[in-house]
Image (tube, rainbow, N blue to C red; front, side, top):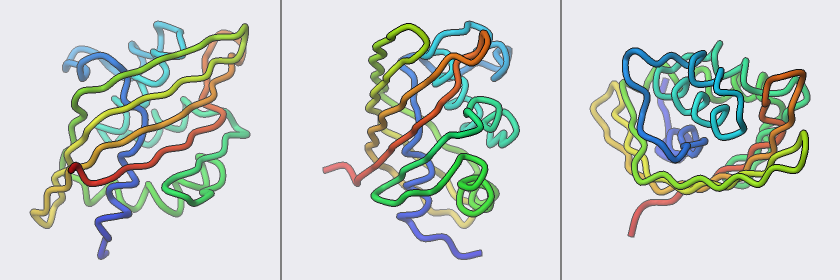
Amino acid sequence: MKLSLLAIAAIVALPAAAQPSTSNDQTVETIAERNTPAATLAAYRAALETRDAEAMQSLFAESSLIFENGKAEGSFDDYLAHHLGPELHAIESFTFSDPTLEVEQHGEVAIAHETYGYAISLSDGRRIERLGVATSVLVQEDSDWKILRYHSSSRTPR
């Protein structure tokens, strides 16, 4: 499968919480158990870094909508099926750098915006580096915070 640089770059223009990458003893589940909007976004980043599609799905509301680099991608399940899922197999590793995260909570709704850098190593030897930004709306469902809306974009560093 041939992947465009833009498509791969768009994949990782995803949440990067303002904390270091998870260590080997921290799983996506233990991060999400902290039960805050920021922890949900951190768990999403951890799941993306480990290419754990099932963990990613658990962090999104059923009625989620994804917008990426100017395109409406549908629900997270749609996005995973037609875009992100197939491309995860071509990614050997990626890392986030210099993340920032601001969360504003209003009862059972939270709005977050993030900035970050990232580097991706692909199975064909290519390396992609980008700067990303994301805006998220999260809702509290029962006791869990879920991502309801997610909009991300990225560009080549200057």
